[in-house]
Length: 266
Image (cartoon, rainbow, N blue to C red):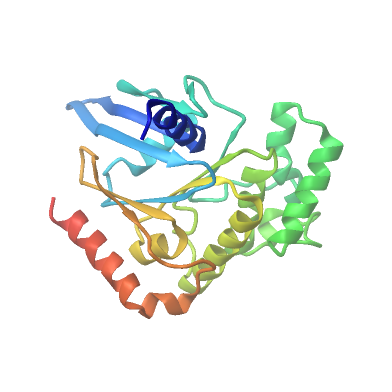
């Protein structure tokens, strides 16, 4: 490879990388001393990629997500978003939490529109996008209902719409289906894939559920117990679109066995 072609390949690689995490540590002060949640985390996340973070409780998965939102800062290292140092919250990042956290006094539509109001976006355009997203997740006709009138799964669908209404290029999801029953969880997982395949966001998805991670993601990041480190990044060798039947394939089992072994050996 010539010097010019190597430079071009390097430039292309940088252009395809959406999030770059360099040598990140995070230490918290506690009453009993200092606790290191993350240690020497290095990770590149490509544009439009679906990444799943898995690992035992307390390994720093949610901490890493908060660092990408810039709600907290690394104790050491840096994070780049689109090649720019991430040192404050970005409107280009949306987030969906484990609980829907919908305001009970606001309608479904008004809950979805909240980020657009905070960011001062054109509300006519935001309203049209919110209605489109609600239709996409099967909540068309529920715009004027209140959260208390919806099931848990429907509330989480609304929360996903809220995370996408301002059209961020990155969507962070912190165990968004953990509180749901198994069937609703499966349904929402495929709903999420349908949204992702249509809108092609960069998704970083935190979960304890290894089969869920494999079924959804392009790559699975296996993390060690605290202090959280990246044990390995596994490329998921399954075709898209994904189906539930893939869970019974040799490739799926191989991925599952590898990830479990990585998490348990530390």
